Length: 247
Image 1 (cartoon, rainbow, N blue to C red):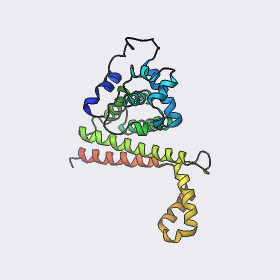
Image 2: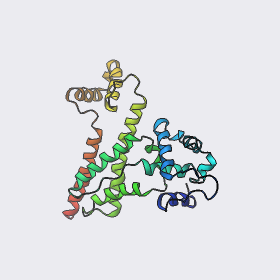
Image 3: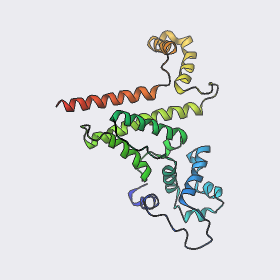
Image 4: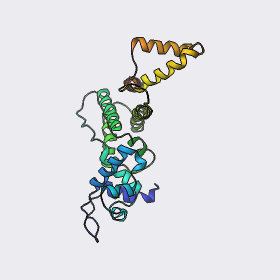
């Protein structure tokens, strides 16, 4: 979507609700209802299934009737993202680490609930109030910590990227679950697959074999979110300490 095409999405996400079509039969459509219909389809079939035609059929209207409310697929997806994202938890204050940990876990829960959000929230696009509220909460947690504005935004991008990576792994593991046991996380599935290979080719990969054996003995699988989150926050804390010390 180019800058000259952003206007309709901006109006839908940020403007007053449309009054509805000026002519023709009133269908009682609302932007929220349209978004929820798209979300239901995307949850079941993926983002590609949520076409204007499918959403119109779900709402029992013609595609042309739907176009009176939403001008196209890009705007439909923008509405779906805004409706599907959970509201960002209020920021009650407290230590910045705890606030960002809570933020990251909340974001992951939203992506787990609607995996198609991973595909829908990439690239340069119009963001709605709810999505920007998520960014606001994370940046506000870093206020007064000694980071520049650019560094605070980069820190949020880094955290979001880690969360998205975990969600992508879980999505892929779920799609390819096949013979895996119910409830297994991606680490367990990966270890199961590697175990088959290592039984016959383990001598070529001694370090990997030792790591897998240690994980099997001592646990630690499916903790990638917390491990990565902790290391990112450790790095930010080190930077803040150095700034405070004048380094």
